[in-house]
Length: 254
Image 1 (tube, helix red, strand yellow):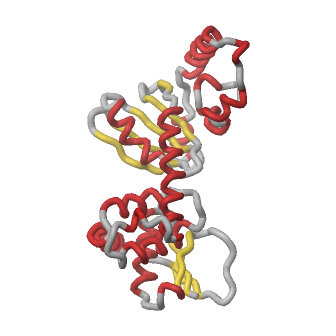
Image 2 (cartoon, one colour):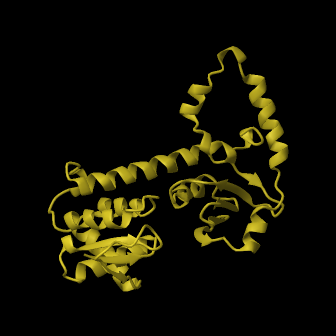
Image 3 (cartoon, one colour):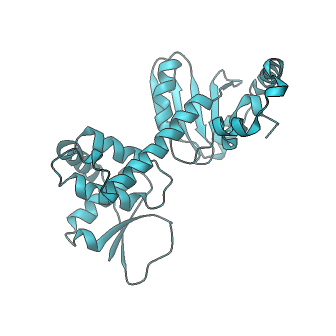
């Protein structure tokens, strides 16, 4: 078995797919792994994937032409998953997608397709929930800041929604676990940026109007609450505990 080791990114995985496919060792004799994940397997040869724009574009072009845009979007969302086996699962999916002359995205009876479908559902659900639960506070620089801690790498899926809703504002969505941000310039668009340097961290932790709105939100929620109808089990079903540390109305209570 030959294992191709790639970076945890869409580009890294697609270049891994390219190297594994063009190695002509046979699909059963190759696999993909993310860097710094898991233990080294015995009796396997490891090869480091070299990323190039040409490889990435070739694989994307092949997916779109032979499997369709929906298949490419599924691969893109799967690349955002937290699953450690996602690189190899994407490769197995593409083995079918690039050889099957039909709508492979509906063939859920194929295990490789179902695994990609499941990752897509998990990533999409988390992005949808974060859009609903996202809370922005105003920094001293006049920039709206939202801090999140998602399991999957989903802030890129949140960006189009807030670019549409808050198109005239300067805002940042910061993934504190991965040290990366979506940065939006008013009326100009947004971009992804690595913000794990100490300078960026200090700027993102700078003072905001959070405390003032904490009090307002808590006062509002207390005033409309009906104590006799409190149901914490139901609350957790609609609003999981892991989202609450990033929500204004729950600051200081979780």
